[in-house]
Length: 178
Image 1 (tube, one colour):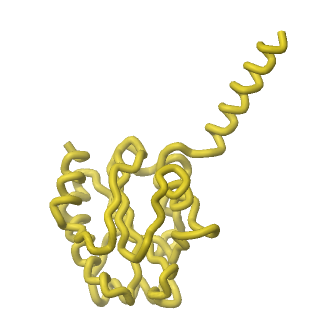
Image 2 (image 1 turned 180 degrees about the vertical axis):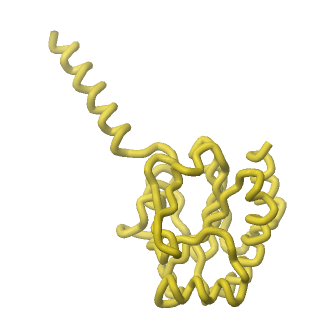
Protein backbone atom coordinates (compact mmCIF):
# COMPACT_ATOMS: atom_id res chain seq x y z
CA UNK A 1 0.00 0.00 0.00
CA UNK A 2 2.72 2.46 0.98
CA UNK A 3 4.79 1.58 -2.10
CA UNK A 4 1.80 2.22 -4.36
CA UNK A 5 1.16 5.58 -2.68
CA UNK A 6 4.82 6.55 -3.04
CA UNK A 7 4.78 5.45 -6.67
CA UNK A 8 1.72 7.58 -7.42
CA UNK A 9 3.24 10.55 -5.59
CA UNK A 10 6.49 10.26 -7.57
CA UNK A 11 4.53 9.98 -10.84
CA UNK A 12 2.47 13.06 -10.02
CA UNK A 13 5.60 14.99 -9.05
CA UNK A 14 7.31 14.04 -12.31
CA UNK A 15 4.26 15.16 -14.27
CA UNK A 16 4.13 18.47 -12.39
CA UNK A 17 7.82 19.10 -13.06
CA UNK A 18 7.37 18.29 -16.75
CA UNK A 19 4.65 20.92 -16.93
CA UNK A 20 6.72 23.54 -15.09
CA UNK A 21 10.19 22.91 -16.54
CA UNK A 22 10.15 23.02 -20.35
CA UNK A 23 12.34 20.43 -22.04
CA UNK A 24 12.44 22.10 -25.45
CA UNK A 25 12.98 25.59 -26.79
CA UNK A 26 9.41 25.63 -28.06
CA UNK A 27 7.84 24.99 -24.67
CA UNK A 28 6.38 28.35 -23.82
CA UNK A 29 9.32 30.67 -24.44
CA UNK A 30 8.56 34.04 -25.92
CA UNK A 31 10.41 37.31 -26.37
CA UNK A 32 9.24 40.89 -26.52
CA UNK A 33 9.61 41.99 -30.14
CA UNK A 34 11.57 45.11 -31.00
CA UNK A 35 8.47 46.40 -32.83
CA UNK A 36 6.21 45.56 -29.90
CA UNK A 37 4.20 42.38 -29.65
CA UNK A 38 5.60 38.99 -28.87
CA UNK A 39 7.85 36.53 -30.68
CA UNK A 40 6.62 33.15 -29.47
CA UNK A 41 8.97 30.24 -30.16
CA UNK A 42 5.97 27.88 -30.08
CA UNK A 43 4.97 29.46 -33.41
CA UNK A 44 8.15 27.96 -34.93
CA UNK A 45 7.70 24.42 -33.63
CA UNK A 46 8.79 22.01 -36.36
CA UNK A 47 11.23 24.50 -37.88
CA UNK A 48 14.91 25.16 -37.17
CA UNK A 49 15.67 28.39 -35.33
CA UNK A 50 19.02 30.23 -35.21
CA UNK A 51 19.11 32.59 -32.24
CA UNK A 52 21.95 35.09 -31.95
CA UNK A 53 22.62 37.48 -29.07
CA UNK A 54 23.66 40.72 -30.75
CA UNK A 55 25.04 44.16 -29.85
CA UNK A 56 25.13 47.18 -32.13
CA UNK A 57 28.47 48.55 -30.89
CA UNK A 58 30.32 45.23 -30.99
CA UNK A 59 33.15 44.68 -33.45
CA UNK A 60 31.18 41.64 -34.70
CA UNK A 61 28.16 43.79 -35.66
CA UNK A 62 29.08 43.31 -39.34
CA UNK A 63 27.62 39.81 -38.90
CA UNK A 64 24.18 41.42 -39.09
CA UNK A 65 24.67 41.43 -42.88
CA UNK A 66 25.33 37.69 -42.90
CA UNK A 67 22.42 36.97 -40.58
CA UNK A 68 20.21 38.83 -43.07
CA UNK A 69 21.63 36.71 -45.91
CA UNK A 70 20.77 33.54 -43.93
CA UNK A 71 17.27 34.89 -43.35
CA UNK A 72 16.85 35.66 -47.06
CA UNK A 73 18.39 32.37 -48.23
CA UNK A 74 16.67 29.93 -45.88
CA UNK A 75 13.64 31.75 -44.43
CA UNK A 76 11.27 30.59 -47.18
CA UNK A 77 12.41 27.01 -46.50
CA UNK A 78 11.57 27.31 -42.81
CA UNK A 79 14.57 28.73 -40.94
CA UNK A 80 13.89 31.46 -38.38
CA UNK A 81 16.88 33.71 -37.77
CA UNK A 82 16.25 35.68 -34.58
CA UNK A 83 18.48 38.52 -33.39
CA UNK A 84 18.41 39.08 -29.64
CA UNK A 85 20.01 42.44 -28.82
CA UNK A 86 21.62 42.40 -25.38
CA UNK A 87 23.62 44.82 -23.29
CA UNK A 88 25.16 42.11 -21.13
CA UNK A 89 28.61 43.06 -22.43
CA UNK A 90 27.94 46.83 -22.36
CA UNK A 91 27.92 47.20 -26.15
CA UNK A 92 24.27 47.81 -26.96
CA UNK A 93 22.48 51.09 -27.57
CA UNK A 94 20.13 52.52 -24.95
CA UNK A 95 16.75 51.43 -26.31
CA UNK A 96 15.09 49.00 -28.68
CA UNK A 97 14.08 51.94 -30.87
CA UNK A 98 17.73 53.01 -31.21
CA UNK A 99 18.78 49.43 -32.02
CA UNK A 100 16.08 49.10 -34.67
CA UNK A 101 17.07 52.41 -36.31
CA UNK A 102 20.77 51.53 -36.19
CA UNK A 103 20.18 48.12 -37.80
CA UNK A 104 17.82 49.54 -40.44
CA UNK A 105 20.25 52.29 -41.44
CA UNK A 106 23.46 50.27 -41.33
CA UNK A 107 22.33 46.77 -42.30
CA UNK A 108 18.86 47.07 -43.86
CA UNK A 109 17.65 44.29 -41.55
CA UNK A 110 14.27 42.68 -42.07
CA UNK A 111 14.84 39.58 -39.93
CA UNK A 112 12.96 39.40 -36.63
CA UNK A 113 14.53 41.05 -33.59
CA UNK A 114 13.64 41.01 -29.94
CA UNK A 115 13.77 43.98 -27.66
CA UNK A 116 16.97 44.33 -25.61
CA UNK A 117 17.19 41.12 -23.54
CA UNK A 118 19.36 39.81 -20.70
CA UNK A 119 21.09 36.60 -21.87
CA UNK A 120 23.44 35.80 -18.95
CA UNK A 121 23.34 35.30 -15.23
CA UNK A 122 20.55 35.17 -12.68
CA UNK A 123 18.33 37.60 -14.61
CA UNK A 124 18.74 35.84 -17.97
CA UNK A 125 15.67 35.50 -20.16
CA UNK A 126 13.99 32.11 -19.48
CA UNK A 127 15.10 30.77 -22.89
CA UNK A 128 18.74 31.51 -22.06
CA UNK A 129 18.30 30.12 -18.54
CA UNK A 130 16.95 26.93 -20.17
CA UNK A 131 20.03 26.74 -22.44
CA UNK A 132 22.29 27.17 -19.42
CA UNK A 133 20.43 24.69 -17.22
CA UNK A 134 19.70 22.08 -19.91
CA UNK A 135 22.89 22.26 -22.00
CA UNK A 136 25.45 24.21 -19.99
CA UNK A 137 25.51 26.94 -22.65
CA UNK A 138 25.67 30.61 -21.78
CA UNK A 139 26.81 33.30 -24.25
CA UNK A 140 30.43 34.22 -23.59
CA UNK A 141 30.26 37.35 -25.76
CA UNK A 142 28.06 39.04 -28.34
CA UNK A 143 27.08 37.22 -31.53
CA UNK A 144 27.07 33.74 -30.00
CA UNK A 145 24.84 31.56 -32.17
CA UNK A 146 22.48 28.80 -31.01
CA UNK A 147 20.79 26.46 -33.49
CA UNK A 148 17.58 24.84 -32.27
CA UNK A 149 16.26 21.88 -34.26
CA UNK A 150 12.67 21.38 -35.38
CA UNK A 151 12.13 19.19 -32.29
CA UNK A 152 13.08 22.06 -29.97
CA UNK A 153 16.41 20.58 -28.85
CA UNK A 154 19.67 22.47 -29.12
CA UNK A 155 21.63 21.22 -32.15
CA UNK A 156 24.82 23.28 -31.93
CA UNK A 157 26.36 26.54 -30.76
CA UNK A 158 29.04 28.76 -32.22
CA UNK A 159 31.03 31.61 -30.76
CA UNK A 160 31.35 35.18 -31.94
CA UNK A 161 34.18 34.48 -34.38
CA UNK A 162 32.16 31.93 -36.35
CA UNK A 163 30.61 33.66 -39.33
CA UNK A 164 26.90 32.89 -39.77
CA UNK A 165 27.58 31.96 -43.42
CA UNK A 166 30.39 29.55 -42.58
CA UNK A 167 30.02 25.93 -43.71
CA UNK A 168 29.90 24.91 -40.05
CA UNK A 169 26.62 26.81 -39.68
CA UNK A 170 25.08 26.42 -43.14
CA UNK A 171 25.74 22.66 -43.30
CA UNK A 172 23.79 22.20 -40.05
CA UNK A 173 20.96 24.47 -41.24
CA UNK A 174 20.68 22.66 -44.58
CA UNK A 175 20.67 19.27 -42.85
CA UNK A 176 17.72 20.39 -40.71
CA UNK A 177 15.81 21.78 -43.68
CA UNK A 178 15.85 18.51 -45.66
